[in-house]
Amino acid sequence: MNELIFRGKDLFRPSWSTFAVPLLALTAESVFCYVKFGALVTVLVLAGILLVAVPAWALVLRSWSRVGADGITLCWGVGSGRTYAWEEVRWVDVREVKGNGTSTRSARIHLADGRRRSLPGLGSSTMYPSESFDTDYRRVVNWWEHSTPPTQRVRPQKHFRDRLTPTAVGMVLGLVALPAIFVVVYVMR
Image (cartoon, rainbow, N blue to C red; front, side, top):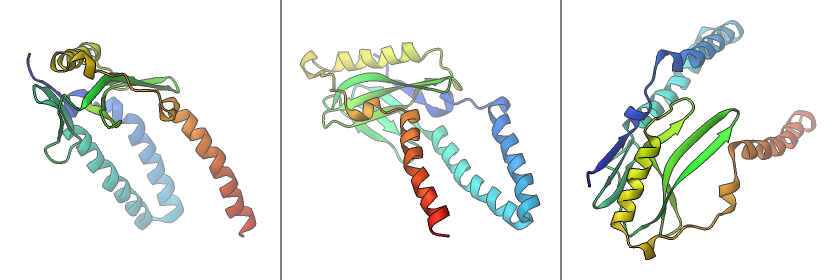
């Protein structure tokens, strides 16, 4: 079988329409900040945003996954990546997260020690749809099934963290943050 490579720069194809809403929001924030605080604060806020956003975007574009005879190698944009031998991989599945009218699917591996790793470059979402996601995922599963005996393939048990969704986490954090904000604003003035 041929070695498979999935790269972040192939998955995340930025277009001007992708950046339209963030640029509009950044412009509105800049105008508000300039009117309220002046030029120096506006420049510092924009520099801070760019200082975080540009390196993060560069790491996303440099991320990749390679599936081959030696196992699965994952690289999150720094270094040469980490290879997980086929003997370590117990299960391959798709994690799907839905919320607010969006859907994100990513392929992931479950390791013998219980850890999970998503495969960078192999995913599909509402913003970045991948027509070949199902086919590519099936190709990864074929490699895994070809490289491991059936006795080594064990479906992991569901954990509490599998039931957590971004919406549920946000609701819990909101409920925890409200009393803290109340204490800070009303009690400590």
